[in-house]
Figure 1 (tube, one colour):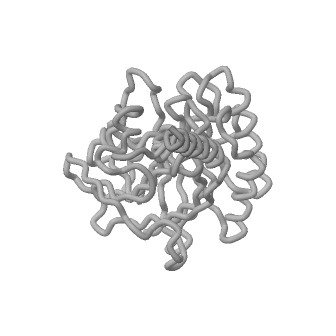
Figure 2 (cartoon, helix red, strand yellow):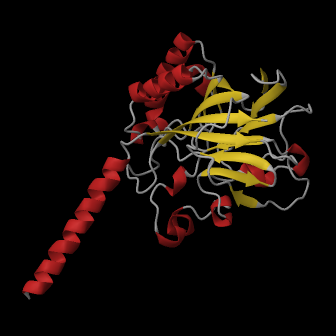
Figure 3 (cartoon, helix red, strand yellow):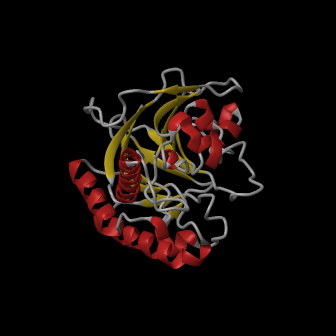
Amino acid sequence: MDKIYIILLVLAAVILLGIVWCLTEAFILDHDRASLKRSPGGPSSDKEVTVKKLKGRMNAPSDGPADLRFFFFSDLHAELCPITVKRLCNAIKKSHDAGAIDAVIFGGDITTYPRNSKMGFKYLSQVSSFCKELGIPFYGVSGNHDYYYNNAPEECGFISLDAIEVALTSHISGRKIILTGLSDSGKKNRVWHTETAVQENDPVILIVHDPDAFIHLEPQYRPDFMLSGHLHGGQMKLPFRMEFLVLRKSDQLPRMGAVQGVYDLSGTSVFISRGLGCGILPFRFLSLPEATVVEIKL
């Protein structure tokens, strides 16, 4: 019986430590860097979407100047985000001091529940004020939890990229680069966009909350670069990717191998963020909160 008690105590200790770690991990901000290089052949015209993980593009030593540099964060879920606005703004300042940031971009999902809207609006408005102090534009798109907000850009202080385009200029070549976004229609009865608002032949950077949006774009509208969130890196990494088989069954790209980090999707260079906050429960396991400097290289 003594052995049984010891085994039970050990199991209880392991479970307790696991719970403590899951709670603790949500407070650890991973301030990282991702490098997106334009695919030599450009976006594919094939209807089928192919997924290729690009290794060595996260936090790798810099291989030269970038055409553009963005500070990207997504999935705030303010009521379940232990990362304070002060810590996020410090990360923005540190990134800007290391090399000018062309824009701070928010990838959607202000809160999990509409009753907490003021909390999310206050958080992002403080980020907006800080960006103004530094002279950095602050852009954003809507997430699947944001469909009930009609005034989010005004309340949060960011410029909405939903269905608009912004012309930026490469620091290396002076070439025009188009920054645009797509709106999210919500969690139920989703309507997917098949095209973007861009009508030009310049390189395109698409900001869209849910990376599955790429699957539904007509091939001729595929961008050169795409930044997304939504997946939280799984948030709780389980064996055999059970988190996507049980909890996030509707997400398609994770079943194709795209969960977090840098990928080539049919010739489009894509970054998928793990997000800043937590969805539903304030737990994370092997999926640190993330705010990323994304370097665009043509």
